[in-house]
Image 1: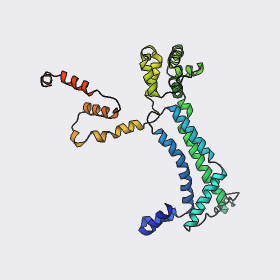
Image 2: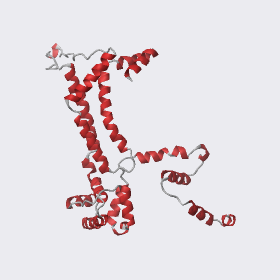
Image 3: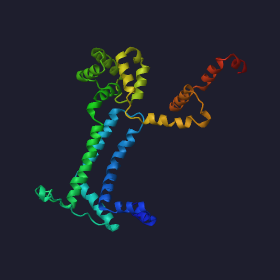
Image 4: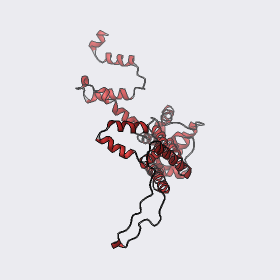
Length: 299
């Protein structure tokens, strides 16, 4: 919509519109917005995936690695030339000047004189090195630092313990036991008990693993793994579900419920947040009636 935006700003004819026009009618703006559009098309896939409920850290890390590989695949001259040519076409269609070569900066004579840049880059080489590769390197490095596997290694091992039928080796089990100050021998024996019961189930999510754990009464017999499972539930891969829960408050606390107490508000929020949970209304009504003699007479 670049052409339409330019035409609209020219039609508006106010101070801010003239300032925006001066900014966007440059090769530099078009090149960088085209570059970032290509980057965000890739990172948006990761962003949407991380906003899903029930995402495990293992699945999140796999998606992060694919995103990094996709961005690294862009780091070549062919991709740069494609973006450069498309930018040149947009500039030609909108009568925008091509980029000029970088002006040489000189050191004052009193400081010795000479050029600051020993080698002069062409405009295209300057954009390739200082913009295209620099932007991609910065984004890739930022994603790697944000999802550093070293800081998530213990949680990934816990997910491997509960969500797969693959045994932890002795070193991995020792890392978990040492990190959470648990008994190593108990963890190793409980792991074998759990994995044998798990059988051929290759991959589960945390919800199905917990259901399997409780249905087999492992929460009563496997104390060490039960504590680990509680810890695993308190560290979600994202906070989107929590934010959605907070957003429900504006629908609950209306002006009609303005004097609602904290206990009732918490109960209403719990019902709204856990709305996927099946509620036996007949059982609730029966219990409500049975707690009062007058209600028993009426109902």
